[in-house]
Amino acid sequence: MINLQSTFRSLVAASALTFASLAAHAAIVNLKADIKGASEVPAKDVAGTGTLTGTLDTDTNEFKYHIEFSGLTGPAVAAHFHGPAAEGANAKPQLPIKVTPIASPLDGKATITPEQAKDLLDGKWYFNLHTSANPGGEVRGQIVKSE
Image (cartoon, rainbow, N blue to C red; front, top):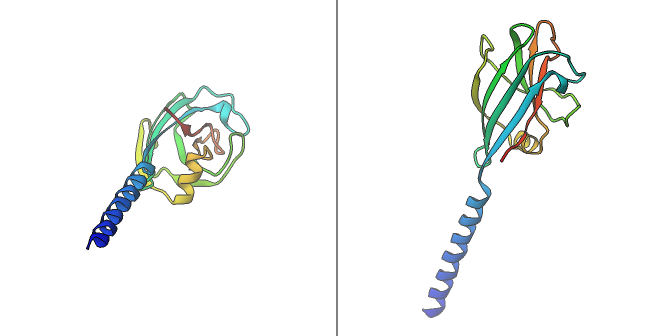
């Protein structure tokens, strides 16, 4: 009987440690980006600027974002999160913004894949705003972790 109680206590302790370990790995990671024409590839000499703040829940892969921008050459005709790409490189869209009109501020959320979450946390996603004058992208910001 003593052996059975000892085994039960060991299993309970191990389960508690496993749960604590899993909970420690799940986190809300804060993200940010400075959005500007100089970050486009190739760089654009435009007055438009913006900021992005966001979070990624590493347990659910829910990505939430808030984007503010101004000074574009005209109305935004498209907006996307692109990746995977390092700063200075281009990549295909991963997450389009599906609102009309595309106006500041933009708030949204999406559940992304584990691969997309890894790329986002590794700094390999960027946000891009497109206008009629700059259909390939007018302003861009590389998304990085923030404090």
